[in-house]
Length: 231
Image 1 (cartoon, rainbow, N blue to C red):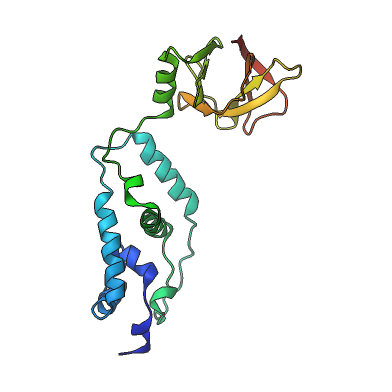
Image 2: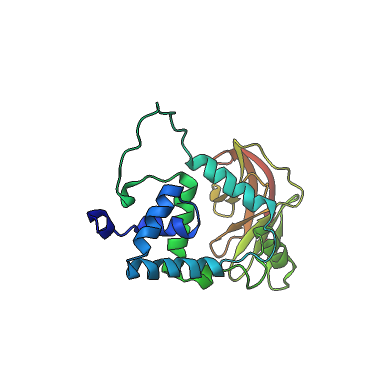
């Protein structure tokens, strides 16, 4: 048995469970698993967790778009190296591509917090827009009309519904203000309106609102007020 056989390839096990190792790495892990009961038990835990992460139907297109954007943002272009002999490295010293690291990390997180929390098979997930629309229809909610938008105040969550507001460019955002205490006070940046609604945590007792269009990131004072409303 060589000294390398005593190294437990913990990082490689998560990637091995995803079947994302290179052929030589895959073979090295299998050779290690053949004589290491501890690593076999760890691998079984990864595989069991992956088995519970089922998706009963195709997720919305915006979910995949968000994942693609994050992967592109995390990935850094790698220079093309000149052909050189492959170095001999330990199993736990290899670098992974960003998507493989992200996938392996997701499996480890699931094991840490419990697979049930991330299993998608137990009911339909609702978007913020769906939740906001349902809250607006609830007789117990307070709805403030802001012309082309509505502020929805509930006992638990608060929302702004972009009813007829156009989506803004990437360098702009909608922003909500409190106007019942003299100078306007920002209640939050709402994004470009493309999602159809935004979730907020409003302070109690707000009696009047203003909605403005601002540069991305928001402003300290309103730049272009689009609508106002009172409770």
